[in-house]
Amino acid sequence: MAQILRLSCFLLSLLLLTLVQAKHPLLHRRSRARAFIELQCQTTLYPRLCVRSLSPYASNFTTTLSHQQLAQIALKVTLARAESTRAYVTGVAKWLNQTKAKDYQAVEECLDQINDGVDQLTNCIKETQKIKEDGEASDFPWHASNVETWMSTALTDAGMCIDGFSGRAIGGKTKAMIKAKVLNLQQVTSNALALFHRFAARFRSSHVKKPKVL
Image (cartoon, rainbow, N blue to C red):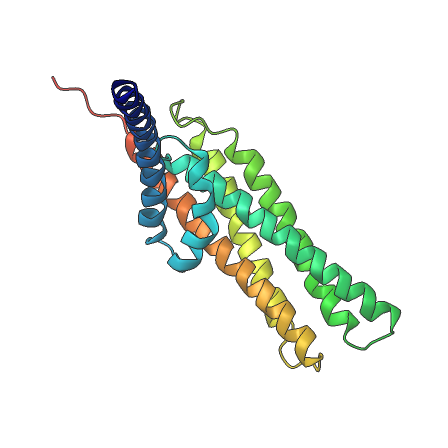
């Protein structure tokens, strides 16, 4: 009986050891993905926000991320934030319009800027999907220029929305909430643009043709 008990304990210990060893590489690889995000976020203007918004996606990768994948994730996060902001401002605009409030015009102008930003970011995501990290570099300048231009426009749109509230007598809580959401969107957009710049720079440098040695 004692021998059977010892054998059972040994087999159980062996099973647990096997499971732990099987899980450790996955955990290690996932931690590499998070470490990569934290490192790349240090190149942005808002690193803490960058890590906070992107790190949840680290668990989706069993190996470390590439610069292109990180840029694409950042773009998708930015678009989601833009759409969430648009939904909130749309609700405020409808309420102000129904109540005939004088603040309606300012909020409607802000909403126009956000709508344009959503369009620009949607175009960016479609354009990045045309870029193959290991593909030819001949079309890359065109794609990269489009993405950088549209992202810069989206960044400007958010800034114009915030600037449009200057001097307006909009209700305190409503004004503060809209400005906070749009400011967050502006910062997330800035981070995404920085990460795309970094990817683009690495792509260009890796595709530079080396002169032939005679």
